[in-house]
Image 1 (spheres, helix red, strand yellow):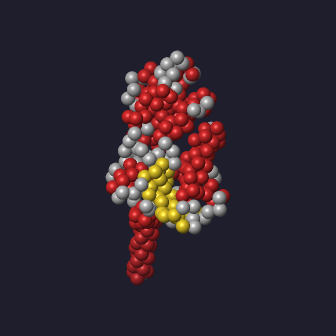
Image 2: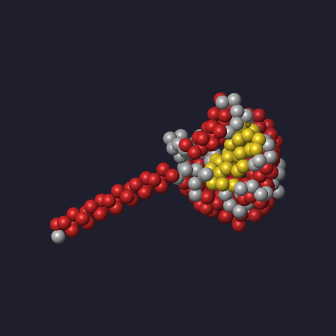
Image 3: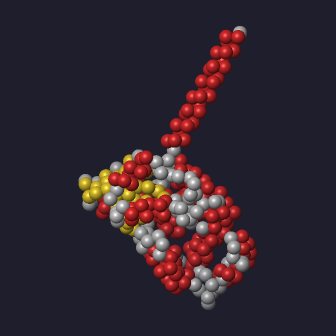
Amino acid sequence: MHHLMQSKRRIAVVGLLLSALLLSASTSLAEPALWVVKGPHATVYLFGSVHALKKDEPWRSPKIDAAIQQSGSLWLEVPDLDDEKALQPLVLQLGLDEDHPLSSKLTREQVAQLDKIAKSVGFPGEAALEPLKPWLAAVTLSTAPMVQAGFDIHSGVEEVLKPEFDKAGKPVKGFETAEQQLHFLADLPDKEQLEYLTSDLDNFDQAADKFRQIVAAWYAGDEAKLDNLFSAEFCDKYPNLYQILIVKRNQSFASQIDGILKGDGTVFVAVGAGHLVGKDSVPAMLEKMGYKVVRQ
């Protein structure tokens, strides 16, 4: 009996050690997704970025570092990350509508909801947002859940990569300009602008937790979870917004990457993680063009 008990203990200890080793291995293997696409003489790495992260939670891995080192240039959604002052006049031009106060476009319940949310993120109340068009009000509130979740909007992937490529003397380019990105929102029809704002209002209480889930799925390289968090609900509930803000932009990204792949050299592409997962993603569009997109 004594020997049997010892054997059981040994088996249990070995089992625990194996479990710990497997858990450790799976944790170390988890890393943000990286894809590679090859043209006749060019290589493009595709990396999904998150625009706000915690400073003390590194996301780099040997695989990602190797791709960065091999790349002769960096492509982002927008190349100038610190151009806020230059954009301010355009934001005011495109985002203010003092003749039609924001509250006049919302229901009484939505105004009360917006007032509560505005106060919770440091504004005096809804009145401070009255001159704004719905798209700008939505953008103004959009970073609050990230900050509430403990993330730093100045510690995103782009904020890390751009100075690194600049320091190495490697070109940093963009698929879009900051002005174009503003127009994507400012040129939305009134109905879609209101949908954009009201969707933010309706989901505001869950937004911080959802962002935590997005970051966790991104760190784990979980494409299916990211697709579900980014695209599935957005596509079903707001199909017009989805087409304008996701599908059309992905088509533009894929078309420009196709041009890069017809050249030569190695390029590192970092665009929002939501653009690289799902049926309408940039990798899916590149595959339809005949390229083989391989997860690293």
